Length: 410
Image 1: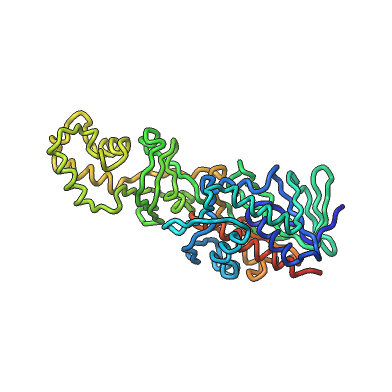
Image 2: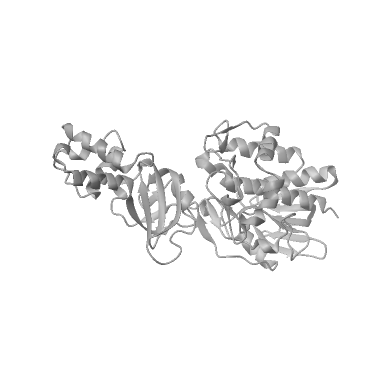
């Protein structure tokens, strides 16, 4: 059985960052091993940002994070913030570009650029990686940790970092393994829910709008009360609503009883009275009713909104009354869509919930229950908004866990 100074379970964003940090602290005095259950490292990382990898956000703030105690994240995020992250990756040779929204992407627009520089950095630091390792047994021994796979392959380490990620994205390797390992050491886990996820709707027009994209302001209402809101791109799917604006507002939506609605304003920069005036002006044209919103909204969306307003498709715009135009404008500015449930963990980008942060030291990421045991990333009860915040948490917490485990060299 091979013996290492530090073993990291999980070769994703947090795990690879932890490996680089630990190896840097240990230098030639110790050894670091990354054990990954998938056949390749960083599968989820490659899928982030639709394959572009939104690796951080210039508008980082505590309000962007959630959990039973979101303040837990601040120690790691302060010690290794956005600029530290950008300098780190620039040092590895990664060039980045920031959008007006604050989202930062690799200049190549390819997630594999981020993964590649991390892999190369780990290799150059002497980190050993083993993929396809399914840890069937993780046990605490007198002075360290013993990990054994189903085929009997085993490793021993003085210190262990759990960076397995969360349950979200099960098709990309999301699993319960990290929670199960930490539970086996006495740690507690909150209820797990999908976050940054599509929302299903019972609205019968959803299917006809499949694939349509539109910029809008979305407000989630629970029993008539404002629950969350955001502005951005919406995409209609076969089952309901998707896109960045929906991911932003999706956390804990439809997780309780009552009525859930999504109110959509497809022209957030245009007042309703101004839209009514524009529609009235169109009565001077020969347009059919089906083309009422032509030049303003996506054609399919415009036709659906006209029908939703109760206007017959057979007539002409010139024949529409002021009241009918008002109803059409209102449909474009305040369309209410009934929501039924979120898509499952397969579709979710992030897991809400996780291992209780109160059981870990926020300044080191070390367990308060078991010495030499660390955790970082999504396995903990910290999740961020859409826009690079979750990867920033992975970088920050992974680096802190790796540094702390390296300095705890016995």
